[in-house]
Figure 1 (cartoon, rainbow, N blue to C red):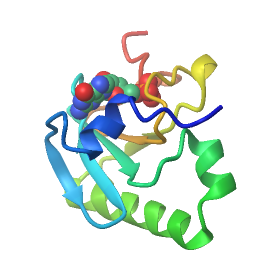
Figure 2: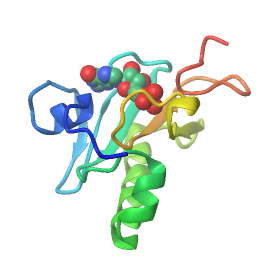
Figure 3: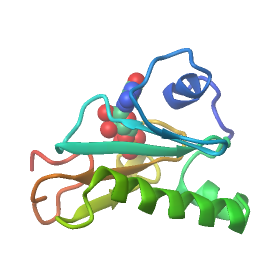
Length: 124
Ligand code: 5GP
C-alpha cells in the first residue's frame, strides 16, 4: 500500500488544516486530538510519510525511530501524565481501528482508563 498524500495528517503537516500544537520540531508534530477520549489526548506523528507503525519500524532509520519515541516520552512528561499513568496507543491497520493512514501514537491520560479500552473504544 502506498502512502496517501491526501490523508488528514498530511494536510495538517502542510498547514492546510489547523491543529492545536503541543510540540513541534524538525521531525515530529504533536497536537491535541480533535475528539479527545480522555482529558489528555495528544497525537504524535513523524513528519516523514509513514503509513503505520509497521511501515515506520520497517523503513525509518533507527535514529529516527529512537528520536520519535524519546520525544513521545518527553511530551508525556511535559503533559504531566507519567505520575498518574498514561496509555500509549498505536492502531496499526483497519482491523485495529486505524482511521488516518499516517503513523501516529495516541498519548492518553488524565483519568483512570478502563481495562481493555482502546483509543477509539473508551465507551466500552
Ligand atoms: P486512529 O483511529 O487512526 O488511530 O486515530 C485517528 C485520530 O485522529 C482519532 O482519535 C481522531 O479523533 C483524530 N482526528 C481525526 N481527524 C482529525 C483532525 O482533523 N484533527 C485532529 N486534531 N485530530 C483528528
